[in-house]
Length: 106
Image (cartoon, rainbow, N blue to C red):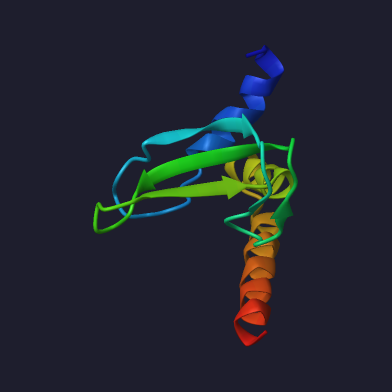
């Protein structure tokens, strides 16, 4: 990768999506080939977006879980990890809770 991209990626990749004490199997930036849902804000991730992608074993070890983080949430993570700015990432997590609540009621 190029220097500037690495400067952005490193703190975003260091942010823990799951705090179970286990390291992810993979944790990198990818360009999506299909539609996905963001693990943080529960928003749609369109095909062709550059996102953080993480895979890890499920707690029972039987399956591989995939998590993806949309570009807006990656930017919020970057602000938190580099400047300690909690506002944006907290808003993104709150949005995800609200969206998941709506889906559960639908």
